[in-house]
Length: 145
Image (cartoon, rainbow, N blue to C red):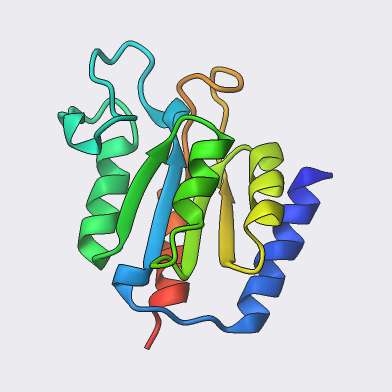
C-alpha cells in the first residue's frame, strides 16, 4: 500500500511541474544506507564519510556535488522532517523505505517531494541500497531547464 502512495505522490509531484534552482533542492537519505560496519558517524556530519565505496553514501554525495544540490542524512523521521521544513528547501528527493516515504511525503505537504524506495538486500534498516539512476533522474526532474 505504501509503495502505491509513493508512486501516486511522485506522479502528482511531476504533474505540478515544480522547477527549482540547485540550492533549493535537498537530497535526503536514511542512515541505513551506510555500511553497518563503518566506524564513521555520518549522521552528525556527512564529511565523516571517507568515500571508501563500501556503500552508496559516497555516490550520493558525488551526485549532490555534480548537480550542486544540498544533501543530508537523517537517522529518523523527525530529523528528516525538520530538514525538509527548512524554508530554503523548495523540493526534495527523498530516499527511504516505502513506509517512511509515505509518512514523510504526507507530513511535508505541500513541498514537492519525489520519493525513491530503497532496496533491502540484508533486510530492513541495515545495509540498504538504492538505485542511483533513479535518484539522478529525480534530481534532474527538479533541475530541468
